[in-house]
Image (cartoon, rainbow, N blue to C red; front, side, top):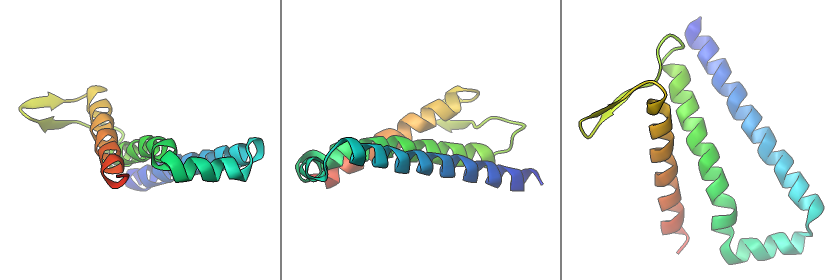
Length: 110
């Protein structure tokens, strides 16, 4: 039952984030003309749009891993001889995921 609730919690977080993305897109479309959005996309769109999506993606990865590890214990891992547990585990994992996504955006944006 706890595993099912973890999946439901992860789905709720992901759907909330996706709803906020759609809402932000509608606000941007309302406040700006489509021509401005197309100009941004053709210029440096991979930086303007992909960096916030990278942050959201990193949050989703950490949230799903946090829910799968169970609500009784926090996410923890060992890397390079250091042990990350407690609040440092999810924070460090988010930073690593975000930096890897940003570096992939930079590589693919060239």
